[in-house]
Image (cartoon, rainbow, N blue to C red; front, side, top):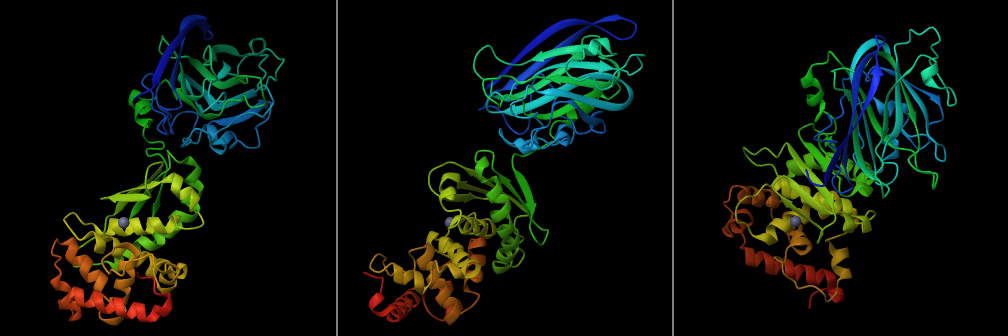
Length: 457
Ligand SMILES: [Zn+2]
């Protein structure tokens, strides 16, 4: 993985009731803003786990308050991670303007703890972690289970385990952090409760409280493999997936490079795709053919609008942002048609693109009038009257052939192309007229309908 930095801070502490000297080791792994991914994968620190001892622990705030924009304490042990760098609702953080607070993790009983791992992610000063970790088995006679700021935990039954400060010497330290607190002797100690005394990483403004994404407590008897195996079970793909309405296809949407489009993708794009992918599959059904049962759409800044290669659709996030109320969803319906067409041979581009636009403009969104007479009228003088110009003009031609000669023409031509058996003679076979004759007739009829408003030069 590129752009990774790692450093290790070691310190010695006395731990355990018997006063055994042990070496606590704090390992800090870091990805800068370019290197951070939703996988939270670090070379030197285990990945976040969803089945550690903290998963079933009780988290509570002992002092301070949760910021109302944060996702709440539940985000710390749900085994789920943010998928981008600035996702307040997927993290826990203390109130804006405050200097952090104190968090308690009650494991429900005394367990032998091997590691405590904490994860955070933010592009600015809320990325680094600054806290002291205390632990207790809860048996001290003067034990205070909820020591507020001002009460010294070491004087009421708690033991200092580690001091963590991942802030860099210069800069705001934005990025993703994995911190692992372990012990060279094998385990940290037998604890029932952990107390995190968390501080803001800076007080220059109100926004210095760390975005904590997950806190894991690994029991000493957890199999070693379980720690590593947990990696990958959490947020395996950046973005999210959705199932089509017929349950036959999984669509993965990757918004890693376009986090601003995630909400649009969830609320607008996906509902259209899950409904229409099965319909497109039906429209382009052919003998012995099963449409892909999964494909992925990646939204990212690039040149152009969109393209499809096999099961991979890539669309320009910057263009989409300018068309959210316009062509954005329709353009991806067009790409979904390419996924279903599933061509791997040489086929006439005009017919491939015309078919995709036919399904988009005449089936999916006829109300947009993107390729019919209404659209043609708007483009007076700017178009050549060519049935094989591709895209919208060919879509108009295909619609005309469908209505006048053969309602299955698009599906039949698609089936031929899918089997690499397309040839121009098929037009005559299905309609009784040659391709050229159909093109001429279409042109005459369209021009007659448009009259003075003919768009053709
Ligand atoms: Zn296309």
